[in-house]
Length: 201
Ligand code: MD3
Ligand code: FE
Image (cartoon, rainbow, N blue to C red; front, side):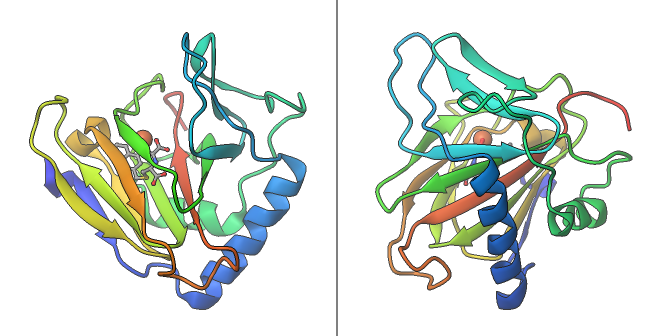
């Protein structure tokens, strides 16, 4: 199971992190962060989100789904920055490019409950995650909710590749450790996850 979870500490060095942050600021100017709500209950997430790529992940009262337009502006999502596409090409071991890149922004109090990523039509590609800003306490378990979990700190510049059995592992963010990075002047954490939604190249 965990042999399919690859953690690459410091994959992006300090300069690459600043460039990536610049790329994401440009994306978020065109596709502003929005606050998703839980299906049915309408309870807001503590994490704010945006996307880049042909498809973006959204959640609203009707459910979770991927869609080609921003839910608030109605515009198509911006393209995925080349630095992220390069990391996918080097690390994903998949014949095609990512179709979606979800941008999660965590304030110092935001968290994400234990969940599986299973809104995609295919699980044959890995999910590739990039962390920027304050360190997070990441929890990962097995493919059943009740499976034992372990905690891993994810710091700015770290990349995680979830392939094979780890692709359907339960995971979440327990907390963000304020003051652990100076990348974001106002603190907080950004996580980028590149995904394949449909099979093929
Ligand atoms: C393990 N994001 O967006 S990234 C998510 O840090 C999400 O924002 C977290 O969970 C974050 O869905 C965790 C690391 C991650 C992403 C996807 C996974 C771990 C994963 C998919 C399967 C298993
Ligand atoms: Fe997830």
